[in-house]
Each structure stands twice: as C-alpha cells, then as structure tokens.
Image 1: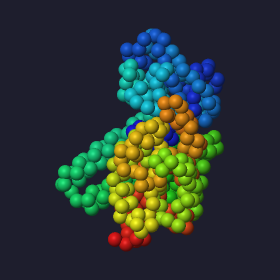
Image 2: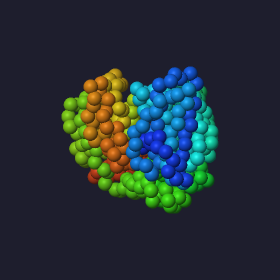
Image 3: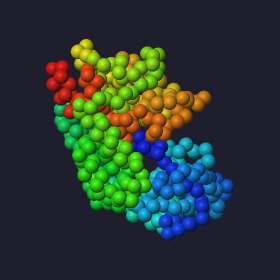
Image 4: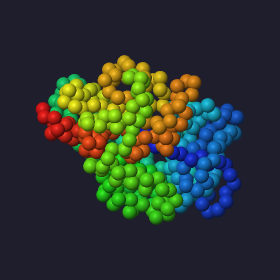
Length: 382
C-alpha cells in the first residue's frame, strides 16, 4: 500500500491476543525468518468491535499469533517488527487486510514490508490495486524524466500528469464498486472522498455495507466534510505558529486576499515535486493579491523547519496541520492522531492537496495542477 494516505494511518486500533469469543474470531498467524526468541511484534488493528487494545507479543520458535474479534466485513492490521520500531514507518512495518478466520503472514527479520500474506480475499484486492499503483508511479517517474530531459514540453507534461491524476481515483472507485462489502472498500472510499465531489461520494457510499456504516461513523464524517468544502462554502479555519515569521497565524488573517492552501509534507515525494510550481504561482501573482498558506503534515518539526529554510519558503505562511503541535524532546509531534489534524476539516486524506480561497473567505475550489493554473489566469490574467 504505497499510496500516500495522510496517516490516515494514525487512525488504527490495537487488538490483543484474547481467546476466541464467537464466530467473529480472527487469527493472524505470523512466521518471522531469522528472528530470535523474545523479540517482539506489534499489531495495530482497526476492526470496529474491540475498541482500542495496545498489545505486543513475543516471537517463539519464529512464530507469533494475534487473535480477537472482527466484524463480518473484516479489518485492517499494521504489523510492526521490534518493540522499539516506529509504527507506520520503514521496512519493519506492513499493512494487511483480514477477515474472520485465519490469515497467515510470513516475512524475513527486518523486511516486514516484503511480507507474504495468504488467506485474505481483502488483501488480494489490495495487492491487485498495489500493482496498479506501482505501474502508475513508474509512468509518472518516466514522465517527469522525459520533461526534465527536454523530451516533452511543459504543456505536454502538465496534460499527461493531469490525465494520470484523474485516472488514479477512477481506478480506485472501480475497485470499491466491485467490493462494497469489505472493510477495504470502506477505507478506500475514505481516500476517494477527498478526490470526488459530494454527489459522487454519496453514490459510492450507498454501496457500502449497512453494518459497516452503522459500526464506524468515520466515513460519514468525511462525506460531511466533503460537502462543507464545496465551492462557495466558507473556508474552515486554519491556525498555528509560523516559525519562519515567528507569529501566531490564522487563515482569517488573510481575508481580502486570494489564498492557495497547499497541504504537503517533506516526506511526500509528490508534494516536494510540486513545490517549484507553487513557487512559480506565488512569484507570478503575489503582487496581484495572491498568498500561499503551506500546511505541513510533518511529524518532525526540526526537519520541517530546516527544509523550509533551505528551500526558499519564507515568503509563504507556514504552519502545521496539528491543532496541538506539542513535541517531545527530539522535536516529534506528540499527538499525530486524525482528531488532532486541522486538515480533517478539509477532508484531506492524501497529499499533496490544494484549495483556492477567495478574498471573501469562501472556497473557490479544490484545484490541482492545470485546473488551478486556469483559475488563476481567469482571476488575475496572464
């Protein structure tokens, strides 16, 4: 699962190794090649039944087991190797979708992200889509290389990139429509709710299992946010401390200006690739009344500050998406849950994502690439 979901990630629930209680029982049996007895595996599982249980199990004879209860539509597990490993990051973590019954996972020590999973139809669905992602990003990489080598024009690059951007959610939506009774489809529709308008989201939402929708309200909240960020609606407030300007700042401070809100992060390759174009737009239209608000999803505040200082971002307004941006001694955000993200008000489940706000404080649109360029030309002229 290599698409950039804003730790959407961080919405996971943990399940322990409790004894089976009913026909809703799931079992995740793991095999770790090269592991020693006493080493650890952490399971983070979202399954809508057991709530939050934090659990870490020891490996014995190269094996480990997690059990619990899961709804008929299944759940999502993140498996992390090593007690000190950072969840959701690096080679020592992978995600798998599972259902009632037994799911097997096998991996080499230190290479959890290369795990082989069997016994899960939902995982097969996810892996099939992952192949599309790999092909998609390979095409995007070649497209970028062709542009940088002068083999295609900027106009042709933008045209192909925009077409690819639209292909991405269309393929995801096809998979959702074909598998509406799965937790996988529910999570995917969460992502699609950021890319589609409210009408399209509603049409897919009606396909989702009624039991699933009754158990987990998160998607309903996302679609509500989708409706609240349609063109013409008041832009939800965003605020925080801008370290480069050393000021406390809010979006309301820019009323009377046109504002490009860029949701990004230093760890997001697509975001970083898009920053030069944001700079071009700022330089072209700033004197005509355009400002840029860069909303970062970075967890490491030190890395974020260093990147901004070294990449000429001081002209923008720069704040974090986290409502509470408190950090530990190393500079990492303490609370990175979705509930602590201001981006939730804009239903941002992937990055990069850009919104254009008008001088009246209302949303002009959720605009990307060529669409944003055209709208700015329409507003300011060439």
